[in-house]
Image (cartoon, rainbow, N blue to C red; front, top):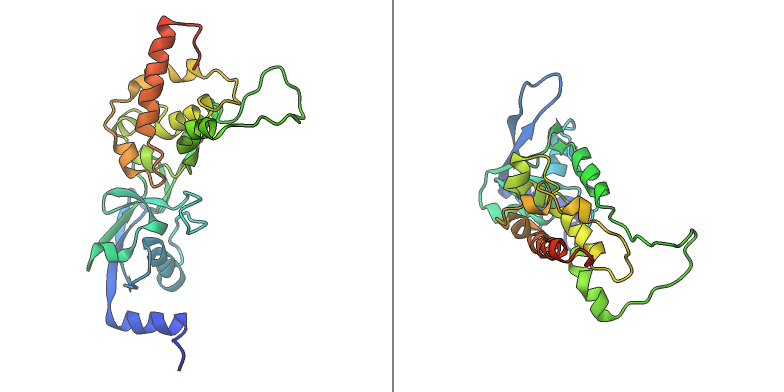
Length: 255
């Protein structure tokens, strides 16, 4: 006989073992504040926390709201707080938590829209303010010229280009949680991605050289610790502090 299909395997494993998920629920107009509801889901050997949430949504409670898309650690949309830590739920496995329970909450530091869905408009505005795109001066659209780069030129900014805007760094950052005006780790790291690109001609000094930008960072390093793509936004911030300090002394220097 062949191996049992997925449905049969789920049934077999579910008969032997489950794990408790304690999920934060918040329904505008119904709840004054978030409350926790418990759900027992199959403890499958290959299930991520996101699979557990999908099981709840599909089998137990269709009213549960949360964001997800690719399930491959690429889109960044499934970031949540899992047992107190900001994590991508598609890459966080239920077996990491033994017999449970596993507490799932929305990312800290953001207004909650419903259940596990947070409002990211503030982040999007901050991201747009650093102009995270290549800026070319004196050229008209459409741009047709190619600008080749050496491997070294690519390597200069490649690490910072890996950011997927999952917002885990914002949720972990003690500065952003206390000061919502702080520009934040991801926006600064992405600004550095373009600052260090040999093709870029932009000047983001007026946006980054502020108390609410790089100088607001206290270098706790939590942003780098929780980053699933190893972007190291803490390093990006410290590097631009040096750039800003040198430019204050040597104003003609832009990089």
